[in-house]
Image (cartoon, rainbow, N blue to C red; front, side, top):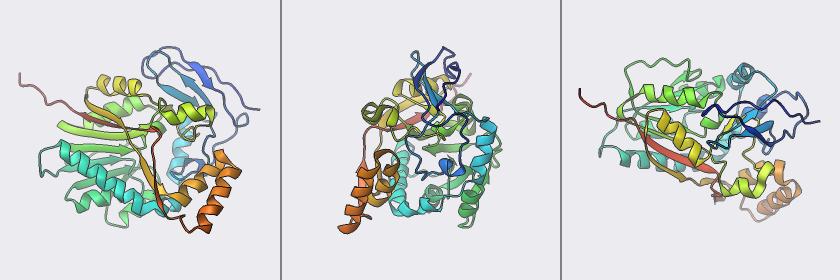
Length: 309
């Protein structure tokens, strides 16, 4: 039977939390390596999720030590990630154009991606003239990126020691929900930036339409996600870490229809299977689809330039 764990205090503000959704997995069920892959099919499968009414941050309570989860990440292999490579690259090029518009025109500098996976974003950044570096815990993903000549540190943000100075831009795409301590990680991102540097990232949005529609069956409730954010909690986190918040907005995802329907089977069941069969019949499984239920938040922030004494 699913269990209810002891309510933890809020990591961001320290206030008590309340149970938002109880676990829908058996008591003490271990987390499988496949549940930690980017393309994991284990959607809407989650441990106890607690919510802070004071700041809006939510967190899950997995039954295993967080150090064990970190070890599992190091062993993750996810070749299915390449199934939507073209769509991912299109999104990354758009992201690069956006962040370049926030800095001095024509500038290219040192860029760090936290959670760089197999390096698709880094490759796009390199092609545009950036001096690009990545941090990636998965040995398989880091080796895949290095095989294409990309500079990727295999480890965690906490373990990373930069060579060559601070960075002009730090980015992370769909990473912050995975972190054991997003407060400490945000401060670390601040430390790695040069004064005036940009920090741009995406994460799941607990306050979006998708979560309100699906409730406890929201696809982004996954056992690998340890924290869930609202605009309010992200604003508080970013500003309390010293950043100047430039903007928050929602972001759509563009992926192949077949890939989306394959992943939807875990929470839509036969409906998704029938839709997948129809898509195959009509030859549209590779058609790109744009999905936007407000499930993804895009945050743009800047490290202030130090004032002269």
